[in-house]
Structure formats: C-alpha cells, structure tokens
Image (tube, rainbow, N blue to C red; front, side):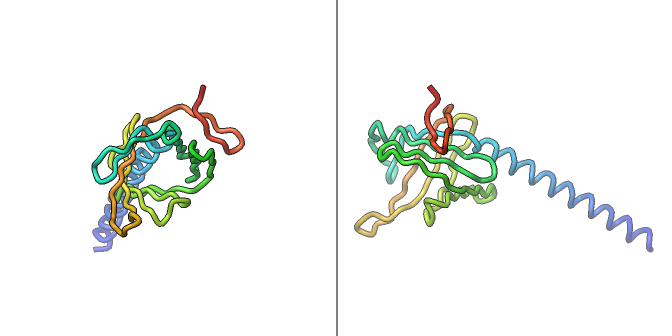
Length: 149
C-alpha cells in the first residue's frame, strides 16, 4: 500500500511539473512576440475608420524586458516610461499610464499588433476603438524612443 501511494504521488508530481512547464512556455512565447517596437498605422472607432494625422501615425511603443515600456507620442512630442502586463489567458494588456483603460489583444504575430479598448465619449456613450500597429525598428536613447533611420 505504501508503494502504491508513493507511485501515485510521484506520478501526480510529474504531471503537475509538465503542466506548469508547458504553460510557462506558451506565456513566454507570446510575451516574446509582444516585446518589440510598434508603430500606429490605423485606427477605428465603432468599426469606422478614423483618419490619422501624420503625427498620430508617429505614435511608437516599445515593450521591453522587466515589464517596462516606452511610449512616444509625436503629436505633443511626449516620451513616457511606463509599466506593462500581459495576461495570456484573457489576452488583456495593461499599460500603467493608460489605466483604467484595459487593452484586449485581437491580433499578435511577428509583424502586426491589434488592440481593442473602450472609452466613453463626452455624451456618455461607450465607444469601441481598435488600434493597428506594425512592427518597426527603433532606437532608445536617454528614455527617448524614435524610429531607426
């Protein structure tokens, strides 16, 4: 009886290690896909295209290691250093400087990132936004994120 109990516990331990090991590989893979520089290329509001100005298309974001991200907003020439967190199960992306807005990742592959989020209009209506980003090469110097020339 003692040997059967030990065999069962050993088997259970091995199964748990395999499950935990597989889960962390998936999380790391998806975080790795996100951890690069992205440039805003288009946007929709309630499924309708929004015309972006040249400066809006200059918006950059870099998801770096240790959950640090750098954001450049070209329209007002602002550089932010923030924190980010990505929950793979819910596909929720939080960026601390944008909280309480929560981003939902719709697409994430080697070259494209699409996020959906909700915001209230001035008349109290809940609007749905989607931002479409492409992967780009950037430089980061003294906390300033810019497109690589």
